[in-house]
Figure 1 (cartoon, rainbow, N blue to C red):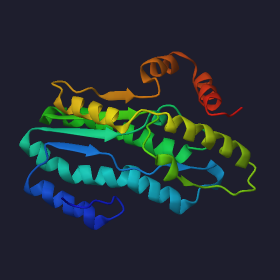
Figure 2 (figure 1 turned 135 degrees about the vertical axis):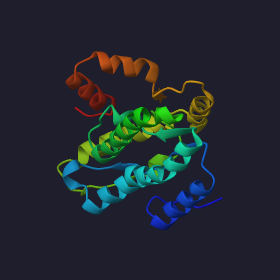
Figure 3 (figure 1 turned 90 degrees about the vertical axis):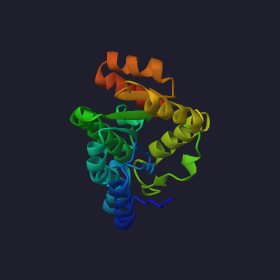
Length: 219
């Protein structure tokens, strides 16, 4: 077993070397930091760390693993995104942007590597009860003009996550897609995804954004 921090170039190189020696059949990219705060008050270093962990580190590692998988003529890649990647929520802009980027990389990559027997699936969970609320990095001044809104949003968000689905549900989805003869391109699970996703696709964009704000206690 090898340690892997997406902030460590040495860790990424070590995993890449293992994949070069013996190509991986399956890669599940599940690294991530949850972050919140007003767009205006997000520090540059926090944004860089979030994108390194949630996007750039994972992309770099996949780039290094793909030659071996391509040569082997097989492989399954599962990217763990978030429903917020397609349903933007105020005061989660950095997290939303990172998950939207991961979705974009995955959807484009799927079309590039299918010819080599490699399938790519993006799994987008909704609210999951993993205790992530206690680990979320939070930014914004206590006396900020946005402070009251941020507190309302986080209170509702934390409550939704406490009532969320267990992580085992997402693990089941991942295993299903790994074993599938024809893995799906995009799968959403949790937060009533089967009803919510078709609904938001059918309504105007502003209506979707307003709905997301209302669900999270914002005017």
